[in-house]
Image (cartoon, rainbow, N blue to C red; front, side):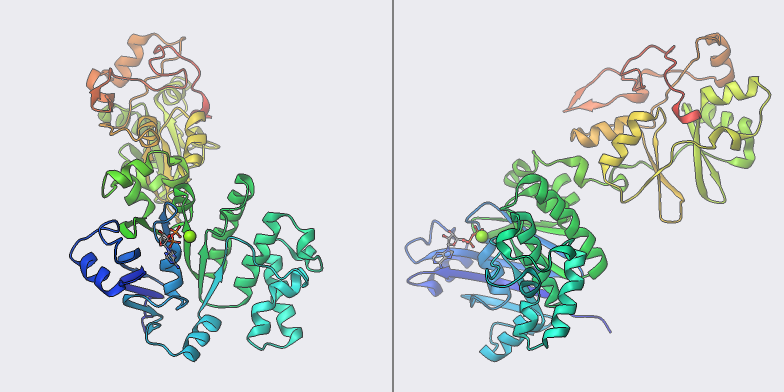
Length: 459
Ligand SMILES: Nc1ncnc2c1ncn2[C@@H]1O[C@H](COP(=O)(O)OP(=O)(O)O)[C@@H](O)[C@H]1O
Ligand SMILES: [Mg+2]
């Protein structure tokens, strides 16, 4: 049996004022909020979206764009002027007051920006409050509230009073209360906006962790795009009452629907939003362990790259550089496995770019990307990483890193590898301008070919 969508909003309008129906008629014909000001205040104009069970759906927009009004229509606090809202398949628009109360009790709960804690109740009783309203007995509701307080990190403050808590803790109690209610859907209106930045970030991370464990459906409202990008599985961007784009953070970041969204996303912390999987290139240079060092050398020579990923039983085991391989050959060591042992671990496809950056700083070879089974699914050469972080369209292939130890004559290396440094091979296009070929090595772009600072990957 497939579940109905958690929430379906269809062509929602909300106009406050003298003549809402007339305003809707004109808005449907394309009028803007300003055009219909004489008839009323058009808070929400033709908003449609679907939220799937288990999803974090973020509604993002500047103050006054209509976010809170949308949210209040979702749980029936405000009747729409036109359009329909379905919660788990049931319309809330024509629902009786009794049905609505039932929906709010069992299906949808709300977390507000201002904690809305009851000052005369302990943390525990505040967290249990929604259950009290549902008529759950004292012992049971306290037990369930205690469990959730543990999850939000407040297990040891259950007996405190709200005024003994910091703002961040109070907001956790608000969150605990909504979670304790046990509803499938949580509506969160600027729930973290009043918190200072560090605590806010902590709460965002905690919400993601909780969501992984509890799998609720969350509609989260924020005016902060970084928060939207971090939390949202999908984001709806609102402007002047209309939804101007709905998409995954990545879609919004890389393919903004219009100049307005594009301007918005300029300041986004890309490293926190983009994942390894979203920027990786297919793995080009790979070799099985069984091919030995000579096989690895052949791959590097044929593809003209400076390193190769080593695979065993379809799993990624590590990467080796040309330098390490040549050294091994000279020493008579043909066991490829010994060269990759203890090498840099790979990143997971879902890891944020921040993790990739850390790895890339230490490693002269493209960062390897693996899936849940440890299979190599891509690599991220440093140019690609830099381009993704700087929103630079890059024309690149795996960047040859030709790393020549000072003790080996260059002629010998070029003979062995037949590597020709072709000027076009690592050209990045910076903002439309062709940049000179850049060699990105730990010694810095353009470092001399004699740099010796690239031991990392070969350990
Ligand atoms: N009860 C109301 N009466 C009149 N205008 C309202 C009412 N509620 C909201 N508005 C107007 O609707 C617009 C959207 O408000 P709101 O949904 O609160 O935006 P947001 O949550 O994005 O800041 C604003 O211009 C606001 O002034
Ligand atoms: Mg609001």
